[in-house]
Image (cartoon, rainbow, N blue to C red):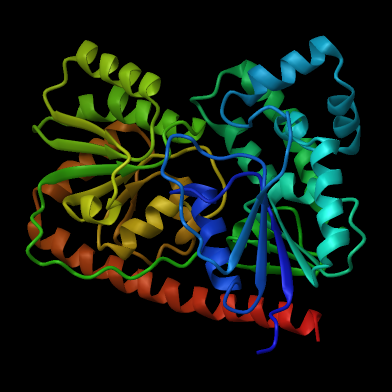
Amino acid sequence: MKEKPKLFYVTDYYPYVGGYGRRTYYHIQMLSKTFKVYLFYLYEKEEVPKIKLGEQVTCIRLETKGKRIGSEALKKNILSNIKLIDSDFIMNFLKGVPLIYCSSIKEKSKKELEKYYSKLKPEVIIAKRVIGAELVSNIQLENKILDMTDSLALFYSSMIKSKEIPISKKMIAMFDHFIAKNYEKNIREKFKLITYISKQDLEYCGKIGNELILPDLYEKTENDKSLKKENDLITIGVWDYYPNLLSLNYIIEKILPEIKRKIKFVAVGPINNETKNEIKRKIIKLNLNHDIEIKGYVEDADREIKKARIMLAPVEIGSGIQNKAIIGLKLGLPIVCSPLIKNSIDPDDKIESIIVAHNEKQYAERIERLLENEAKLKRFRKISVEAYNQYAKYTTQQNKKFINFIRKLIK
């Protein structure tokens, strides 16, 4: 049997449930059918179960004493580095790497990866986002691909526009927006192909011609007609991710108090105990007349989502295609959401079941009207599934283009 060509996949985190981790898992599963995949990563998400990748994938955790990245990175990593005048920070800053990633990119990790490259000699390297791009920056291989996923510059732009972000953070976001926009333009010249998750992300920094839209595909779920609609509203996300946490706080503090009828609301997704307890204290303090459950991580998230009548997604900060909305469509839920989410999936306003709200009163009004109209809910469920089917068809086509592009590289 002919040996599969070798491919390095270089990222920050080992694949995990939700967000960027799920995209990494999906890509590796797709690529391992054609290539012998070596996954190189720095960190693991401790709060969620480890995903098994199968025997076709060799997983290597790069040794590093670099600090973890995450929602607290700016406070813990960047400011502490300034006090210590950390040389890695200064060098990365001068190279134009967006601030939040600086202290996670260590020369030790890069050199270790370079040793593996010299030993294994892969035909192709796929780097994931900024961390991946910087880790492979010294490797002299022509066949390098960057999965940027979503636009950092677009993300910082949404932070600057958000009413929920304090002015102190907006000042840093403005600086990072400038750095990120230039970084995304310049980094494209160092890779054969750049992939983005959506058209708006690809176009935000301007095209140069070596880009491809590569959305995520989600596995089809069996339609369980015996499953009852037990919950009125559901929201999903990785709640330790700052933009998601802001949206959950907004739901608890602003939207739910505006809803007059008693409803059952569920929040699903990985959350640490400290954040969970903080949310619970807010719920008690507000004394809301609703049945509210912060479930955290569940094994079968799709089943939990199917129990709800409406998906609620008031996310105001972000870029890319919001996974929560795609999952909502796949599982046949109408989605009441922010303009950010609507524009990422349905910029031409063709999907009637994705309903925009601009403030807490509009959210409450749209939710109550839907809950009072079972016929409309039923019709919207059908529209959501049809919209997802169209999305899945397009995504399958783009994935084929992606694999074919890589095959041509190594011929």
